[in-house]
Image 1 (cartoon, one colour):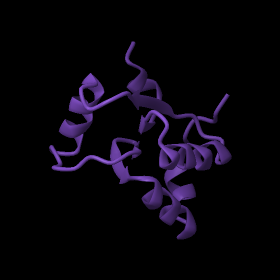
Image 2 (cartoon, one colour):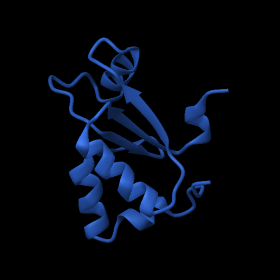
Image 3 (tube, rainbow, N blue to C red):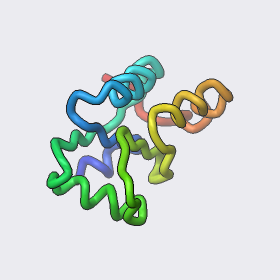
Length: 98
């Protein structure tokens, strides 16, 4: 079974990325379940999947966050949504982290 079906929140991360760790920390604080897809390098097959989801951007940064198939953006975008009070609304009804 495809994990993406089980998780409505997907975060693409890069190994060792501090912004990825910060974004995951916020999601962990919100206690929501999410799927992390860690990319090792530009040749990783998940990079091609991500580029397709983002309509082949010239530049790819990490993390990239999706909630219910809606592209949220990166770490700063996630924190901005939280600061504006909109993140909790997007996370309503999401499965809780085990």
